[in-house]
Structure formats: structure tokens, C-alpha cells
Length: 460
Image (cartoon, rainbow, N blue to C red; front, side, top):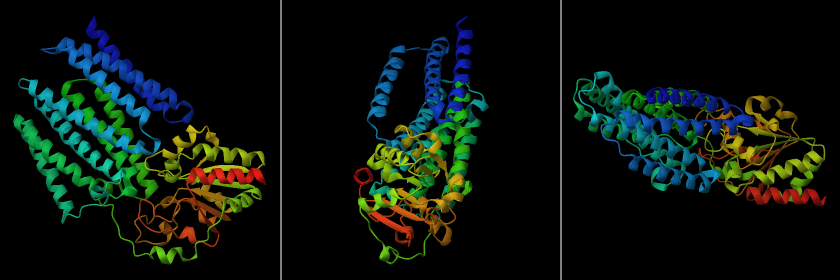
């Protein structure tokens, strides 16, 4: 009876994983989707414990319960303490530890197996290869997102692409040896795959990190699915396949949003040089304004578009932006929020941030939807965004962001950029929008600056 209940629990968990993923497709159902996913994980975990009790040669529930408690405490503390701006780093770590778990579980199963069949050995090899690449690649991505000085800039390695290909070929060779029963090949396979993971992420610049995170998320799912094949766990196969497939789809969407080739991202061709002007030349005609000046512009506007960026997230200015939007709506001003697919440091970063402040989802406009109408916008407030509104993407074919679809805010009648300084974005290039004839700079912290504008509006 118990084996039947375990299989039934696996089926229920798999269905709930699918429903949870479906719920994530819309903000109104996202919370419910999260709950479904969490419940599915609990059911799958309990079923896996009973499954291990039935099939394991030695079953020690104390270690399992201890692992669950420690992991739950760490996860709970991180969920409460990690800031929204650090969420991309958190996702990178979760991807990485998912890959590491696959490597350890597959390796542990390999040590306990007696004369495993070739297909099981291939699954273990695939889990070790993908999992190790995911773990070390994610750690490096985490370092780049944290902007550690040692890791922020790529380490130039001659013929790196050829080295990557050679590492992959050797890894596949060790995987082939494992299929013929040479179990010892798992250790060098994992070690070389670890080097490959670092080498793949090393040349990728900060501007491409949203793509890297989505791709590593897919890798972690594929590693989990391979581990499921290795240990014959159906729910792990299903959930890993869901993560792997959805991660690849998201990666393709991110590549499209950034005008990047998926193949180029996979092999690490992400760096390009810029022959554009220096920052001093670009910013020679920058005009700065005060909060009172911005309030006067907004007071006479009929349509206002707000572009949120990473600076808004850092300053936690979403609630101040919501207050500004409500104040303008009371004055019968049409307020919309233009969302670039890769604004911030991970897919959907700005959507989550604005939803946290209870900004109506209907006011959030995707790039393709709002770009054709930006010429009719009276005032565009760019808050902490940089690369996603940089017109160089359209004009300089040698730029690191050349060809990347951007929000065409330079076509608005008036543009006000709220930034603390003229510092560049992730792409490390100047933005001529800041010195455009229709643009003004309001130098301030995003939250403090928006609150000043709100107060100035109220005083008028």
C-alpha cells in the first residue's frame, strides 16, 4: 500500500508544480502559484523520505530531519533578510546550490550502486557535468553581481573559446568512460566541469547577467532531471524538466530583449568594444534641475511615463513613486510605467518591485507596447535606469549594447532623469540621453528625490 501512496504523492506534487508554474504567468495568480510550488515541494520531500525508507539499505532519518531543519532555517533567514536589490544574487546562489546538490546526490548514488547499468551511469555523468558547471558558474555570476573587484572584470585568457571546447570534449570523454563502467572517471569529470563553469561565465559582462541567471537556472533544472534519472525519482525528473525548459524559454526571451544570440551567450562571446565618445564629451551640455522645476513640468503635463531602473530598487523608492503617481492621477494626469524586460538585474525585477508597492498592474506597459506612443508623452521620469534607455544602442554598432531594444524615451517631449550622478550603467558606457536637448538631470537619491517632487507638487 505504501509504494502506491508514494507514487500517488509524486503525481500530486508533479501536478502542483505545473499549476504553480502556470500561476507565475500573471501577477494576480503569482502568490497562489508560489503556494502551490511550496506545497508541492513539501509533498515531494515527504514522499521521498518514505521512498528512501523502503529502498535504502541503511536509513537514518535523524540526518534527513537535521538537514531539513538546517536548510529551512537558512532559507527562512535569507528570505527575510535579503533585500530586493540583492535578489538576483540570491537567485544565482540558489541555482548554484541546486547544481551542487545534483552533483552530490548523483555521486552518492554512484557510490552505493552495485553494477549500475550504462544508462544510469550516463545519467550520473550528465548530472555531474551540468551540476558542476552550474555551481561554479553561479558562484562567479554571484561575484559579478556583487561587483567584487577581483571578479567584476573578465580575466583575459588567450584562446579561451578553444579551451572551453577542449574542456567540454574531455568531460564528454570521461562521461563515455563512465558508461563503460569506469566509475572513477566521475571525480575528474566533476573537477574539469567546475573549471568549465568558471570559464564559461568569466568573459560575460555585467550587462548580460540577466541572461546568465536565466541560463544557469535552466542548467540547474537539467542537472536535477538527470539526477532524477540516476536515482529513479519521477518527481525530480518532472520538476527538473519544468525548470530546465522554462529556463531555456526565459533565456531566449532575455536574449531577444538584449539582442544577444543564445549561442554566443552559451560560448561566452558577450564582450564587444565601443569606439564612442568619452564621458566628458558626451556630458558637456548636461542641464540640471531642482525638485521645484520638475514639479512645474509635471503640473502642466497630461501624460506622464515613469521608467523604473536599478537605482530605484537600490533606493527602495517604489512606495514614493506610487505616492507620486497617485498625486498626479488626482490631478487627472495619465500615469504609466514603462518596463524594459531586463531593467534591474534579473528578469521581472521591476514588475515585482512595483507590485510590492501595490501599483496597478494595468499601468505597467511592456517595451513593445509603449514605445510606439512615447512621442505623445509630455514628461518622462527616468528613475535610476541607464542602459535600457541609452540611444547609443541604435546609433553605435560598436557599442556593447549595439542593437539592444531600448525604451525610446528620448522621443518624449521632456525627459527628467533622476540619478545620484552621471555614473554609467552595467555596460560601462556614457549615455547621451542625459545631455539631450529635451532632457534634464535631477541629481538626487531616487527615494529622496521623488519625495521632494511630491512635496513640491503639494505646495503648488
